[in-house]
Image (tube, rainbow, N blue to C red):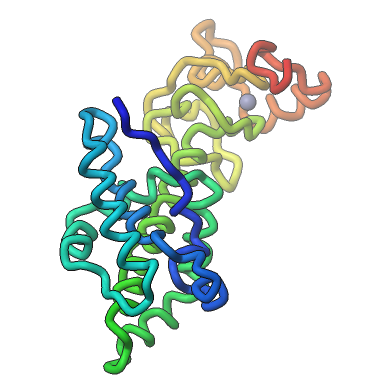
Length: 237
Ligand SMILES: [Zn+2]
């Protein structure tokens, strides 16, 4: 397994939107970096070092000389690589930066791409930026949704082992009446590691006692100085 992940080409400021970065040569080889990381599973599951190396070399040549156009083989590769897979290989900070930059200039990109006189390599860069930026934004959205689904509705702890209820998409904006299975479906019947609220346990007690709402639990937990239910999950603890 000789493939080594190299993040050097992943920074959003390397993809050609910053003229100063281009002048400084920062952009050299960046595009193939994106394309390369669009093949994460192929490269990690089998030894495809040769393929990855040749891909890197092709793109490096293309971008080390601004007069050279992106080779058609690299362009074909960019068509084949799912953008969401490419951005999935970036760090969280890189994805957020790319998503934010794309969101801030997507209209400008569209206007640039509409220009008939736009130079070909530049058009290709912007086209790739558009694809990857859009995918980065989508990935941020998906991760946000995912985080919300594992956020405790009683104490807002992010990191439950699974959504507390089958159709839970995040803490409700308004207080709801327990039992919460009525609103969100089957409960996990697990406890929040931070505040200890039991989903389907405290809002729908088996012993027939009164259900406890998220809000009541939260205030009681705060009155007890917010103890961790599972101290092994406490940050730094
Ligand atoms: Zn909690």
